[in-house]
Length: 308
Image (cartoon, rainbow, N blue to C red; front, side):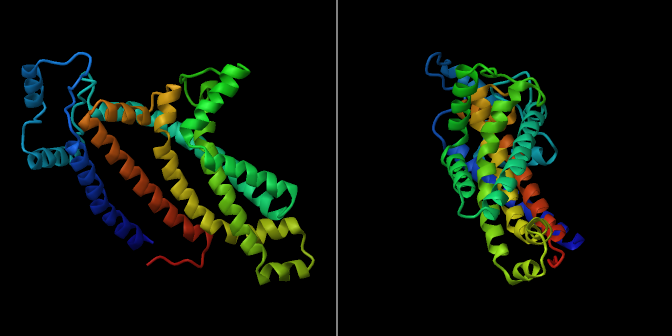
């Protein structure tokens, strides 16, 4: 296990370098500069002074090397748009908000998706199965920014049960709409995979043997079938968690949540290169760690799996 983890961590380094390099190249290949304003254009001399102050007039290889070296020392550079705060300070202030929202959405997805998929598999080809399929297809067919808009219209503007936006912590009512908007998609994915995986396991010989012994159906599903059916679901849950982390961008922007996803959208529209690169690097690290934890969890779900 230790050798496996060390090898995976070492493989994360070149992966992160590739992600960072591609992002750096794409960002700097985009036409325009961070100080191109259509309504209030800055004088050319001011633009040149700003470019010199932030070393944007240096050759690209030098900019790349300087940023990478500073990032390795924990310095993600200044923000062009928020001059009073560095990128590290912005990430430190906004990442906990997105982490709370992402974990709440993932918890909702697990608590809703797996039971819904299990119920659909046990009640296969009944109205319960068809209703669950309708719910999951609806969740898969709508992206997060559509779901948050629909929820605002229905729950805020329609019946006035919840505020139309804002954030006051994960325990506040303002967290309900963004949590549902982000979590409904992953819940639908988990429900679909749980249903198909459990149906496959329920058709195997050892399940027929258990039924022939007279065991109760609930015990067969919970103690024998679910353990095997959850292995592919764990894989999907890991990928889904990655989607939850990256899928909150527009939800946070639309609902006014002060998270790192909202900062990402603002950094793209404002060409805030250091903030954009810093957030991409943080997300790449988070996704790599989630994938590693997913692989490790296989061994706990199925002791037959051996790590090499």
